[in-house]
Length: 313
Image 1 (cartoon, rainbow, N blue to C red):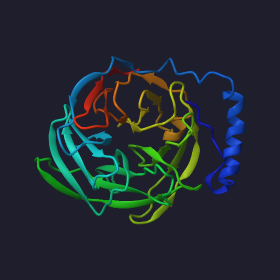
Image 2 (image 1 turned 90 degrees about the vertical axis):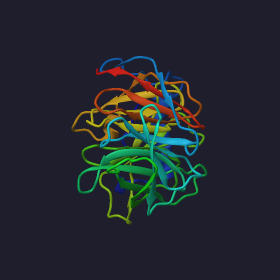
Image 3 (image 1 turned 30 degrees about the vertical axis):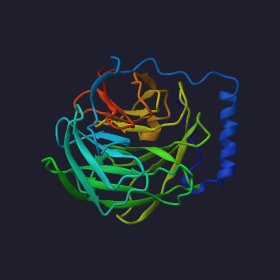
């Protein structure tokens, strides 16, 4: 995918003008040409996706996000799409239920992704992204930061969230992908534009505001995939910061990242195309800690849990 850098956030022209400029810049490269070429070097060496388990019956019927725990070995956290309350679930790597956690101090309009990153004062936190906006009607979006539970004893627990409000510099956007840098905690959002399946926009926030405050995301460019459409449904940053996964319902892309890069800068380079599972409305992807494997999930009750085993580049 190619990322088109734009002017600084504090000097943006109106959205219509920027769209015209972006189109003008993209046309010479895209009009009548093949999609951007995929990276062929520096890619993980991966096997085909395999069935690793399934979501448990009941509760999780429209999974929209997954991330691996940084505190509990072999644990995944998942959450539902719009229509559910503010809660998430802890599962084993085969989908075995471990706990259900209510999120106090949060609401769930349209939770679309979850990421793991540093807490404000250290430790491991989960970031739940209430960033879905199918009709483009919202004027504000929310990120809920929750400390990972100390214990997962089964049954139902509760964690209290910090709320951070986000706005775009140019109006409303639908998005399903939240990426959190594992060292800096910087946030990156990749949009899912309605009726624009070949291009998505990238927005970044270098640092969260005070809890309860509102921050404006900075536009960081646009990306176009080397295969399939640009309707991104999820992503994840490697825990060591060495790469980024993005997925659509049909494809998985890997972007190498160096220690001095932001996530948006990593997305500026061409990605590797990695194996994807055949899923009904694939909605979630996450790295597994301690290696290069990743897991994928789709929507639906008792949805299959797929794992891809990879060797480092």
